[in-house]
Image (cartoon, rainbow, N blue to C red; front, side):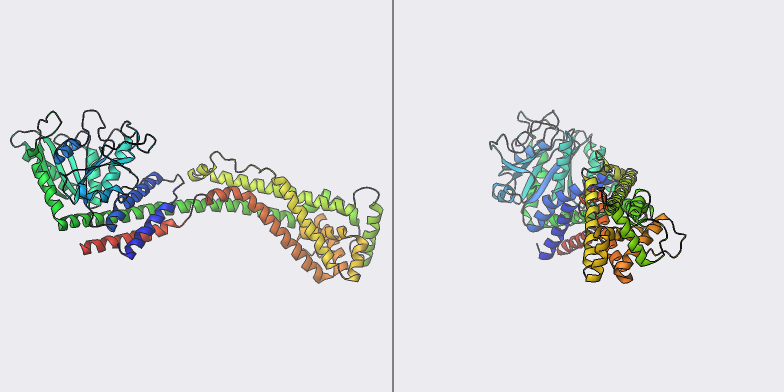
Amino acid sequence: MTNRTTAVLDAFAEHLRVLELPLPVEGVEIARAETGAARSQLGDHVIPRLKSLDAPLLVVIGGSTGAGKSTLVNALVGHPVTRSGAIRPTTRRPVLLHHPLDEPWFTGTRILPGLARVHAGQRRDPEAPGTGDTTGDIDPATSLELRGEERVPQGLALLDAPDIDSVAVGNRELARQLLRAADLWLFVTTANRYADAVPWDVLRTAAERDVTVDVVMNRIPPREGVSEELAEDLRGMLERNGIDVDRLFLVPETDIDEDGMLPPAVIAELHEHLSTLAADGEARSRIARRTLAGALDGLAGSARTIAEHAVVQDAERQQLREQAIAAFSGARERIDNALGDGSLLRGEVLARWQDVVGTGEFFRGVESLVTRARDRIGQMLSGKPAPAVAAEQALGTGLVHVVIDETARGAELAENAWRSSAAGRHLTEGQDLSRLPDGYSEEVSSAIRAWQGDVLELVRSEGADRRTKARMLSLGVNVVGVALMVVVFASTAFIPTGLEVGAGAATAVVGQKLLETIFGDDAVRRMAAIARERLTSRLDALVAERSGPFLDRLDALGEVGTGELLGADADALTQLARDIREDA
């Protein structure tokens, strides 16, 4: 296998491995089944066959319930090697028959790596996988029995598969898995069952993937002209369904002996065909390459189908992400609006601020404003909490309430949006994503207190020179810090120009004039910008945390963009199939 071939198959296998189709969108069950089948096809047949084109040809013998597959296999080998009987299903653990010299090709995991190897007559560990798979009708077998038989010609192996229409779901799935691993499919049917629907569905799938198929019609009534009539009808059905069959073998209804064996003569033609094929290396290679190229074309089709579903999944995930982001972006905007429209500077906050600076004629003079504020502060120090501290606490409490209320509203909007779609309901099932997380209120309070600490530190830093420091200390760091918080809460760009402003704006005017008196216009603008930036950063983090449960559920679904990668894989697989046909 060339480096290019290896790269193509490795890339496809990896993209299938990381693919996630978790959301219940339309068609997802089909896509999941297609993905599982593609993985199985890669591991069971395509990669092993490309690595060893000279390996024995694997002939999988499959067909409907009661078609006589096991009896036919026993006849080809010359003695009973696989179970047959009236109780269904009979074939539960698949049996692989090979020439003893070909054993090394099958003892490892070259093909069907998911099935443990059990040799004929080998005692099994009761705890080993597949120990009970010959006694139950529900679970598929987990092991593959290997039998070396001299009657099986070297260069060819026979695999007796479960019924494709078995009453056991696991057996049906295993039968299709084994058929995907076949180089040549020997399809066995009967004179009275060859028109059944299930076998024809599987045959059409084989035709679509260009699998080489031989057909055995078993148990043909031994009446004159019946064999020819049935053969003509079957060939017509095959042709109408676009199924190209290499050989059609007719086996008459015959009595079996006490060991359940058919007379050798009735399967002589089939036995001769398989022996001739085993001896012809060129013919075996031609069949292996044809089936391999067909399998690659089939995988390319699967890759395109899966890619389409992956793109749909990505689009659904993106829509859910946008809904969550929009809900919390709205919460963030509403918090900013509350900061900028003055609503936080009313009620308790306004009362506490007025305790600090008083009310009245705000524009009588900057210096007298500072003097009055200083006098007012002195009058309030009578054993009660300092007015500036009370104002700071009121500001913080008001902002905490706004953040909690708006993020709760954002979470509720996001969850309602998700519950409007099947995919969103799947992600919210069993979850209360809008519930306030434990400790979130304290976390918000802590973040706001930390920001207020940032503001006080900023004030101290800006008031480092002697003249500024003296003015600041005459009022107190907390008073100046609260003044800066008030300005930030109103708006960093809020500069009123008239007396018609409301209470919130008037409150900001007092704070701004106090700050300008101490630091100057430029410094105030710079300080307000820094304080607002730090507040914005903390608010962004708080809102992002509340959106986390939503976005984390999306992130846990796996990677996105696999659809585009699978589309590229499909083109590469098609080209690889074309190259194999040209080589053949």
